[in-house]
Image 1 (cartoon, rainbow, N blue to C red):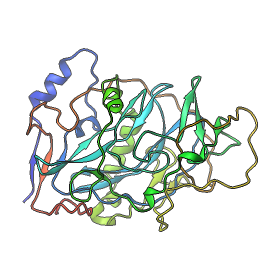
Image 2 (cartoon, helix red, strand yellow):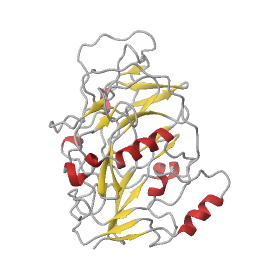
Image 3 (cartoon, helix red, strand yellow):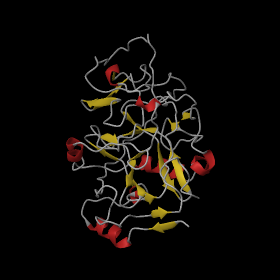
Length: 331
Protein backbone atom coordinates (compact mmCIF):
# COMPACT_ATOMS: atom_id res chain seq x y z
CA UNK A 1 0.00 0.00 0.00
CA UNK A 2 1.24 3.46 -0.84
CA UNK A 3 1.50 5.94 1.97
CA UNK A 4 1.91 9.68 1.53
CA UNK A 5 3.29 11.99 4.15
CA UNK A 6 2.69 15.70 3.61
CA UNK A 7 4.72 18.51 5.13
CA UNK A 8 2.71 20.12 7.91
CA UNK A 9 0.97 23.26 6.77
CA UNK A 10 2.62 25.10 9.61
CA UNK A 11 6.02 24.73 7.94
CA UNK A 12 4.73 26.30 4.75
CA UNK A 13 2.99 29.06 6.64
CA UNK A 14 6.15 29.99 8.50
CA UNK A 15 8.05 30.12 5.22
CA UNK A 16 5.64 32.75 3.89
CA UNK A 17 6.13 35.02 6.88
CA UNK A 18 9.63 36.08 5.93
CA UNK A 19 9.92 39.33 4.03
CA UNK A 20 10.97 39.04 0.43
CA UNK A 21 10.25 35.34 0.03
CA UNK A 22 8.10 34.42 -2.96
CA UNK A 23 4.77 32.73 -2.71
CA UNK A 24 5.29 28.98 -3.17
CA UNK A 25 4.61 27.79 -6.69
CA UNK A 26 3.80 24.35 -7.98
CA UNK A 27 7.48 23.75 -8.67
CA UNK A 28 8.57 24.89 -5.21
CA UNK A 29 5.97 22.78 -3.44
CA UNK A 30 7.90 19.77 -4.72
CA UNK A 31 10.65 20.49 -2.20
CA UNK A 32 11.24 17.43 -0.08
CA UNK A 33 9.21 14.90 -2.10
CA UNK A 34 10.47 11.43 -1.30
CA UNK A 35 9.67 8.27 -3.20
CA UNK A 36 10.32 4.65 -2.39
CA UNK A 37 11.30 3.70 -5.97
CA UNK A 38 14.20 5.32 -7.82
CA UNK A 39 13.51 7.31 -11.01
CA UNK A 40 13.86 5.70 -14.47
CA UNK A 41 16.91 6.01 -16.70
CA UNK A 42 17.22 9.22 -18.67
CA UNK A 43 15.86 8.86 -22.22
CA UNK A 44 18.08 9.54 -25.23
CA UNK A 45 17.05 12.48 -27.42
CA UNK A 46 18.36 15.25 -29.66
CA UNK A 47 18.53 18.84 -28.50
CA UNK A 48 16.10 21.13 -30.36
CA UNK A 49 17.68 24.15 -31.98
CA UNK A 50 18.00 27.28 -29.82
CA UNK A 51 15.08 29.62 -30.68
CA UNK A 52 17.05 32.86 -30.33
CA UNK A 53 19.72 34.82 -28.46
CA UNK A 54 20.12 34.53 -24.67
CA UNK A 55 18.00 31.39 -24.26
CA UNK A 56 19.34 28.89 -21.71
CA UNK A 57 18.96 25.13 -22.04
CA UNK A 58 16.99 23.41 -19.26
CA UNK A 59 17.55 19.62 -19.41
CA UNK A 60 14.67 17.18 -19.13
CA UNK A 61 14.14 15.11 -15.97
CA UNK A 62 11.78 12.66 -14.28
CA UNK A 63 9.38 14.28 -11.81
CA UNK A 64 6.88 12.68 -9.43
CA UNK A 65 3.17 13.18 -10.01
CA UNK A 66 -0.21 11.79 -8.93
CA UNK A 67 0.41 8.53 -10.80
CA UNK A 68 4.13 8.05 -10.44
CA UNK A 69 7.05 9.36 -12.43
CA UNK A 70 6.47 11.55 -15.47
CA UNK A 71 8.92 13.13 -17.90
CA UNK A 72 9.42 16.90 -17.98
CA UNK A 73 10.80 17.58 -21.48
CA UNK A 74 13.99 19.56 -21.87
CA UNK A 75 13.42 23.07 -23.25
CA UNK A 76 14.92 26.51 -23.89
CA UNK A 77 13.98 29.41 -21.59
CA UNK A 78 15.08 32.96 -20.87
CA UNK A 79 16.88 33.50 -17.57
CA UNK A 80 15.24 35.82 -15.00
CA UNK A 81 18.08 38.26 -15.65
CA UNK A 82 21.44 38.28 -17.48
CA UNK A 83 24.26 36.56 -15.65
CA UNK A 84 22.17 33.78 -14.09
CA UNK A 85 22.71 30.08 -14.77
CA UNK A 86 20.37 27.13 -14.20
CA UNK A 87 21.28 24.41 -11.71
CA UNK A 88 19.16 21.35 -12.61
CA UNK A 89 17.13 19.53 -10.00
CA UNK A 90 18.13 16.00 -9.02
CA UNK A 91 17.04 12.89 -7.16
CA UNK A 92 19.21 11.71 -4.28
CA UNK A 93 19.02 8.53 -2.22
CA UNK A 94 18.47 9.08 1.50
CA UNK A 95 20.06 6.13 3.27
CA UNK A 96 18.46 7.02 6.60
CA UNK A 97 14.97 7.27 5.17
CA UNK A 98 15.52 4.46 2.68
CA UNK A 99 13.97 6.49 -0.15
CA UNK A 100 14.76 8.97 -2.95
CA UNK A 101 14.43 12.71 -2.29
CA UNK A 102 13.95 15.43 -4.92
CA UNK A 103 16.20 18.51 -4.82
CA UNK A 104 14.64 21.22 -7.03
CA UNK A 105 16.61 23.30 -9.51
CA UNK A 106 17.26 27.03 -9.25
CA UNK A 107 18.78 30.08 -10.96
CA UNK A 108 21.97 31.62 -9.58
CA UNK A 109 25.29 33.25 -10.53
CA UNK A 110 26.97 29.81 -10.58
CA UNK A 111 25.91 26.28 -11.48
CA UNK A 112 25.80 24.40 -8.20
CA UNK A 113 25.72 20.72 -7.32
CA UNK A 114 23.12 18.65 -9.16
CA UNK A 115 23.99 15.19 -7.95
CA UNK A 116 26.62 14.44 -10.56
CA UNK A 117 23.80 13.50 -12.96
CA UNK A 118 24.87 13.63 -16.61
CA UNK A 119 21.90 15.28 -18.32
CA UNK A 120 23.87 15.89 -21.51
CA UNK A 121 24.14 19.01 -23.70
CA UNK A 122 26.63 20.74 -21.41
CA UNK A 123 25.33 19.42 -18.08
CA UNK A 124 27.82 16.55 -17.77
CA UNK A 125 27.51 16.16 -14.00
CA UNK A 126 29.63 19.13 -12.91
CA UNK A 127 28.89 22.72 -13.93
CA UNK A 128 27.60 23.75 -17.36
CA UNK A 129 29.80 23.95 -20.45
CA UNK A 130 27.27 24.80 -23.13
CA UNK A 131 27.97 28.54 -22.95
CA UNK A 132 28.68 31.56 -20.77
CA UNK A 133 27.54 35.11 -20.13
CA UNK A 134 29.70 37.92 -21.56
CA UNK A 135 28.74 41.54 -21.21
CA UNK A 136 25.03 40.92 -20.70
CA UNK A 137 24.65 38.42 -23.55
CA UNK A 138 24.97 34.66 -23.65
CA UNK A 139 27.65 33.08 -25.84
CA UNK A 140 27.06 29.49 -26.95
CA UNK A 141 29.64 26.75 -27.22
CA UNK A 142 28.77 25.22 -30.58
CA UNK A 143 30.62 22.03 -29.73
CA UNK A 144 27.78 21.12 -27.36
CA UNK A 145 24.86 23.41 -28.18
CA UNK A 146 22.49 23.34 -31.16
CA UNK A 147 22.32 26.91 -32.49
CA UNK A 148 21.66 28.40 -35.89
CA UNK A 149 24.63 30.68 -36.53
CA UNK A 150 22.69 32.80 -39.00
CA UNK A 151 20.39 33.86 -36.14
CA UNK A 152 22.58 33.51 -33.04
CA UNK A 153 25.94 35.21 -33.67
CA UNK A 154 27.37 35.01 -30.14
CA UNK A 155 29.13 31.66 -30.44
CA UNK A 156 32.48 29.98 -29.91
CA UNK A 157 33.83 26.42 -30.15
CA UNK A 158 35.56 24.49 -27.37
CA UNK A 159 35.71 20.75 -27.91
CA UNK A 160 38.11 20.05 -25.03
CA UNK A 161 35.27 19.61 -22.57
CA UNK A 162 33.25 16.94 -24.37
CA UNK A 163 32.67 13.88 -22.20
CA UNK A 164 31.39 10.54 -23.45
CA UNK A 165 30.29 9.06 -20.13
CA UNK A 166 26.67 9.63 -21.10
CA UNK A 167 26.88 6.76 -23.56
CA UNK A 168 27.38 4.26 -20.74
CA UNK A 169 25.55 6.03 -17.94
CA UNK A 170 21.95 7.25 -18.09
CA UNK A 171 21.36 6.92 -14.34
CA UNK A 172 19.06 9.67 -13.10
CA UNK A 173 19.74 9.66 -9.34
CA UNK A 174 22.60 10.10 -6.88
CA UNK A 175 23.57 7.50 -4.27
CA UNK A 176 21.85 4.31 -3.30
CA UNK A 177 21.94 1.05 -5.25
CA UNK A 178 23.54 1.64 -8.66
CA UNK A 179 23.29 5.44 -8.30
CA UNK A 180 25.83 8.13 -9.21
CA UNK A 181 28.59 8.38 -6.62
CA UNK A 182 29.20 12.14 -6.41
CA UNK A 183 29.47 14.65 -3.58
CA UNK A 184 29.50 18.47 -3.69
CA UNK A 185 32.86 20.20 -3.65
CA UNK A 186 33.67 22.96 -1.11
CA UNK A 187 33.16 25.47 -3.91
CA UNK A 188 29.73 24.07 -4.75
CA UNK A 189 28.76 24.14 -1.08
CA UNK A 190 29.75 27.81 -0.98
CA UNK A 191 27.65 28.53 -4.06
CA UNK A 192 24.63 26.96 -2.37
CA UNK A 193 24.68 29.87 0.08
CA UNK A 194 24.38 32.43 -2.71
CA UNK A 195 21.11 34.15 -3.48
CA UNK A 196 19.03 31.93 -5.74
CA UNK A 197 15.86 32.33 -7.79
CA UNK A 198 13.19 29.74 -8.38
CA UNK A 199 11.85 28.61 -11.75
CA UNK A 200 10.33 31.29 -13.98
CA UNK A 201 6.57 31.34 -14.68
CA UNK A 202 7.22 29.81 -18.10
CA UNK A 203 9.15 26.95 -16.49
CA UNK A 204 6.29 26.35 -14.05
CA UNK A 205 3.80 26.32 -16.91
CA UNK A 206 6.01 23.83 -18.71
CA UNK A 207 6.10 21.49 -15.70
CA UNK A 208 2.35 21.79 -15.08
CA UNK A 209 1.59 20.91 -18.69
CA UNK A 210 3.89 17.89 -18.51
CA UNK A 211 2.19 16.73 -15.30
CA UNK A 212 -1.22 16.84 -16.96
CA UNK A 213 -0.08 14.93 -20.06
CA UNK A 214 -0.85 11.25 -19.47
CA UNK A 215 1.48 10.18 -22.29
CA UNK A 216 4.49 11.49 -20.36
CA UNK A 217 3.98 9.17 -17.37
CA UNK A 218 6.33 6.23 -17.09
CA UNK A 219 3.39 3.91 -16.44
CA UNK A 220 2.33 4.47 -20.04
CA UNK A 221 5.54 5.17 -21.97
CA UNK A 222 7.88 2.77 -20.07
CA UNK A 223 10.81 5.14 -20.27
CA UNK A 224 10.28 6.43 -23.84
CA UNK A 225 8.20 9.61 -23.50
CA UNK A 226 6.67 10.71 -26.81
CA UNK A 227 7.82 14.28 -26.14
CA UNK A 228 11.48 14.25 -25.08
CA UNK A 229 12.26 17.95 -25.59
CA UNK A 230 10.70 21.14 -26.93
CA UNK A 231 12.05 24.27 -28.55
CA UNK A 232 10.01 26.53 -26.28
CA UNK A 233 8.48 25.89 -22.88
CA UNK A 234 4.90 24.55 -22.72
CA UNK A 235 4.74 24.07 -26.51
CA UNK A 236 4.16 20.34 -26.78
CA UNK A 237 3.20 20.20 -30.44
CA UNK A 238 4.59 21.45 -33.72
CA UNK A 239 7.97 21.23 -35.47
CA UNK A 240 9.91 22.20 -32.33
CA UNK A 241 9.00 18.95 -30.52
CA UNK A 242 11.67 16.24 -30.32
CA UNK A 243 10.89 12.55 -29.86
CA UNK A 244 13.27 10.14 -28.08
CA UNK A 245 15.93 8.49 -30.20
CA UNK A 246 17.32 4.99 -30.44
CA UNK A 247 20.99 5.97 -30.65
CA UNK A 248 22.57 5.81 -27.17
CA UNK A 249 25.06 8.47 -28.27
CA UNK A 250 22.40 10.93 -29.39
CA UNK A 251 22.70 13.12 -26.29
CA UNK A 252 26.23 13.95 -27.41
CA UNK A 253 25.96 16.52 -30.19
CA UNK A 254 28.46 16.46 -33.06
CA UNK A 255 28.49 19.76 -34.99
CA UNK A 256 29.16 19.80 -38.76
CA UNK A 257 32.87 19.46 -39.55
CA UNK A 258 33.10 22.22 -42.18
CA UNK A 259 30.43 24.77 -41.45
CA UNK A 260 31.07 28.37 -42.50
CA UNK A 261 32.33 30.54 -39.70
CA UNK A 262 29.63 33.09 -38.76
CA UNK A 263 30.21 36.77 -39.13
CA UNK A 264 29.79 39.27 -36.33
CA UNK A 265 30.58 38.46 -32.72
CA UNK A 266 32.46 35.25 -33.33
CA UNK A 267 34.74 34.50 -30.39
CA UNK A 268 37.74 32.23 -30.15
CA UNK A 269 37.20 29.38 -27.68
CA UNK A 270 38.12 29.83 -24.07
CA UNK A 271 39.18 27.15 -21.62
CA UNK A 272 35.77 25.90 -20.71
CA UNK A 273 33.76 22.62 -20.96
CA UNK A 274 31.78 21.25 -23.94
CA UNK A 275 28.69 19.29 -25.27
CA UNK A 276 27.48 18.00 -28.68
CA UNK A 277 24.41 18.75 -30.80
CA UNK A 278 22.20 17.43 -33.56
CA UNK A 279 21.89 18.79 -37.08
CA UNK A 280 20.18 22.17 -37.41
CA UNK A 281 16.63 21.70 -38.67
CA UNK A 282 13.06 22.82 -38.13
CA UNK A 283 14.12 26.26 -36.99
CA UNK A 284 11.32 28.63 -36.06
CA UNK A 285 12.11 32.37 -35.93
CA UNK A 286 12.31 33.66 -32.33
CA UNK A 287 9.27 35.36 -30.88
CA UNK A 288 9.19 38.54 -28.90
CA UNK A 289 9.11 37.07 -25.45
CA UNK A 290 9.54 39.32 -22.40
CA UNK A 291 12.12 38.30 -19.86
CA UNK A 292 10.44 36.73 -16.82
CA UNK A 293 10.21 38.59 -13.56
CA UNK A 294 13.00 37.97 -11.04
CA UNK A 295 11.70 36.25 -7.93
CA UNK A 296 13.97 35.16 -5.05
CA UNK A 297 14.00 31.49 -4.20
CA UNK A 298 12.93 30.38 -0.75
CA UNK A 299 16.13 28.65 0.31
CA UNK A 300 15.68 25.55 2.43
CA UNK A 301 17.99 22.71 3.42
CA UNK A 302 18.43 20.35 0.48
CA UNK A 303 16.01 17.46 0.65
CA UNK A 304 14.49 18.41 4.02
CA UNK A 305 12.55 21.71 4.04
CA UNK A 306 11.44 21.43 7.64
CA UNK A 307 14.99 21.31 8.97
CA UNK A 308 14.23 18.13 10.92
CA UNK A 309 14.55 14.45 10.08
CA UNK A 310 11.24 13.04 9.04
CA UNK A 311 9.82 16.40 7.93
CA UNK A 312 9.66 15.67 4.24
CA UNK A 313 6.67 16.80 2.25
CA UNK A 314 4.53 14.61 0.06
CA UNK A 315 6.44 11.51 1.10
CA UNK A 316 5.26 8.60 -0.96
CA UNK A 317 6.05 5.01 0.00
CA UNK A 318 5.01 1.67 -1.24
CA UNK A 319 6.14 -1.87 -0.99
CA UNK A 320 8.19 -1.96 -4.22
CA UNK A 321 11.92 -2.66 -4.41
CA UNK A 322 14.60 -0.01 -4.83
CA UNK A 323 16.12 -1.07 -8.07
CA UNK A 324 16.20 2.40 -9.66
CA UNK A 325 14.96 0.77 -12.82
CA UNK A 326 12.24 3.35 -13.36
CA UNK A 327 9.15 1.55 -12.19
CA UNK A 328 6.15 3.71 -11.50
CA UNK A 329 6.41 3.80 -7.72
CA UNK A 330 5.16 0.24 -7.45
CA UNK A 331 1.73 1.13 -8.77
